[in-house]
Image 1 (tube, rainbow, N blue to C red):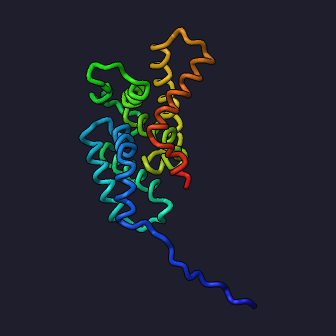
Image 2 (image 1 turned 90 degrees about the horizontal axis):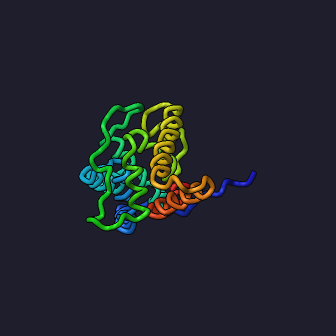
Image 3 (image 1 turned 120 degrees about the vertical axis):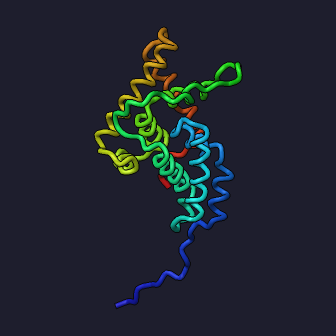
Length: 201
C-alpha cells in the first residue's frame, strides 16, 4: 500500500502586514461599508478602527481570504455597535441625508442616502445580503435572528428603496425603471469594489 504523501509546503496565512495592506488599499470601500451599516460617521470610524485591530490580532486566516475577512470583521463590529433587531421602532438616523455642500448629488450619493434611510435591521440585511452577497443563512447567524426575519427585512428594504425611486421618477416606464434601478445598484456595488467576488473567494 503506497504511503500517503505529506504536504511539505506550509499553509500561507495572512500576516498582520497583509491585513494592514488590505485596510490601506481598500480604505474607502471598507469605510463605506462601515458607514452604510452604522449610518453614523463616528460609529463608522469606530467600526473601521476596531476592524483593523480585530483582523490584525485575530485568528489565522488564509491569505486568499484576507479581503473578505476584513469586510467580515467590519460587519461583525457594526453588529456589535448597533445591535440591529427585527421590527425595530427606532427613528431614522440623522445621518440619513447625504449632503454634498450644496452641489448636485451624484447617483451614488442618492443611492447611499436611500440605504441610510432604511431602519437599522432592514439596512443591515440589505447591505449584508444584497451588497455583500452573503446568504440568508449567514446573515441570520451574523445578526442572531431567524432566516425568515432576514427574508422579510430584505423585502421591506426593496419596497422602501423602490418607493423612494418611484417618487423621484414616476414618469419612467416600468422596464426603463428596472433598468435604472439596476444601474444605480450597480454604481453602489462599484463603490464597494465588486465585493461579491471577494466574498466568494
